[in-house]
Amino acid sequence: MARHFKKDRFILYLTITVVFLVHWIHNDLAAHPGKFAISLLNNSWQVIYVIGINLLYFEHALPFVTSGKLNRTIATPLSIIIHLVVLAFGLYAWRNLGTLLGFYNSFRSFSDNGDALLSAVSLTPGAFLVFAVFKLFFDYAQLKYERQQVLTEKKQAELLFLKSQINPHFLFNTLNNIYSLSQHQPKLVSESILRLSKILRYLLYETGNEFITIDKEIKILTDYIDLEKLRYSETVAINFNYEIENFAETIPPLLLIPLVENAFKHGVSQVRGKRFVDVKCVLRSRELTFIVNNSSYPASDNPEVIDNIGLSNLRRRLHLLYRDFELITEQKDSVFSANLSIKLSSHV
Image 1 (spheres, one colour):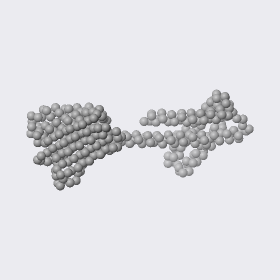
Image 2 (cartoon, one colour):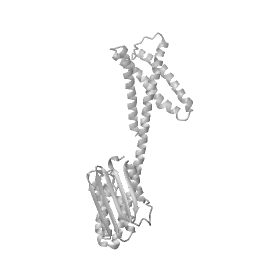
Image 3 (cartoon, helix red, strand yellow):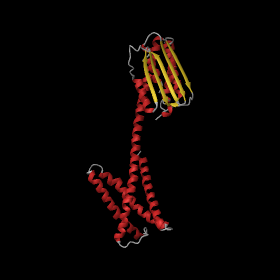
Image 4 (cartoon, one colour):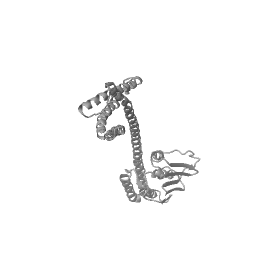
């Protein structure tokens, strides 16, 4: 970031230099047409001093004055006055030096030294003001840029943390499923391990990307649901349907699976009797709708829907990733519903 900042600052001072040169040369040529070479030489010599002194003031003197070591109310305006005096008298002396060295040939004939000094003084406030305005806008833009960088880095760090919570959480639940199969249906363990290997491959090679195509997310959902089908056999009615307009559409990895995982871990695994999990994914015109319904405790037994870690994590990721989304969870009778809708074009 420091290297980028120095480059921007160099561009700033180069821009101010060009602005001064163009303005001063234009004024000279308006009064003295055909004297471009002399005007360029004069103003190049003059701009070296003006830029150099202003640079020293804004880069070193002013930061010291406003650092808190001095009384800012008094020190700041006093430093500006001193700087303007130094700039004016110094410009007068710099022009005289340039005349002696042959770098500066004034178009004006001054009656005395006081008249020459007055010419330098009249140029000083405008040169200072232009430099100050450019510097003010630069500092504001730089501060805004750095603040945005900090917010972006903080956001990325939080997303990485949330994603790091998903992977072990998801893997732990999957291993629990396989353990359950080994206890009750050992013949299905080999097939479940094969499906786990596919899931692990996905976790290792796909979830490191910021985005993946929707077809890969559908595939991991299918593998996970098939693994749950092995576990529950015919005791749970499991349906997964999807209508995808564009399989190349991208979403963040592991965005949808927490809702499916929640349906099994906190839904059908804790109830008895007729159980079901119904999952539907629809993607049309860059609008994603993902609905999960599952059997659950009756609403009278658990009237208030409280997000578990997986759902809380998902909500936070959605807030960080999208501006236009809605996640509604509802407990009605013996059915728990989660309805997620996202406008994928609203990605932050």
